[in-house]
Length: 98
Image (cartoon, rainbow, N blue to C red; front, side):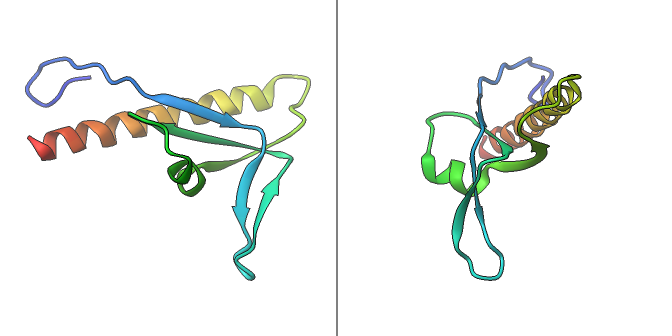
């Protein structure tokens, strides 16, 4: 990835895959845990539990995963999309702060 000047830069970020994700009921605003869904959260820098809580993406992938591997392929695609979006956002942040 380049920074707009043609200089290649690397971005190191982490991905958390959660097998139990928090959800907020839209009617009651009660927080509960979804035991049958996978969540993903990507971040650059230091981990923040509050950011993970607020920014975790709840996927449509349900547990247990299917035996044919289709759910795993879906998860890999979602991770790939997330990584691309995080990279673009982070590079935009670097460009705007220079």
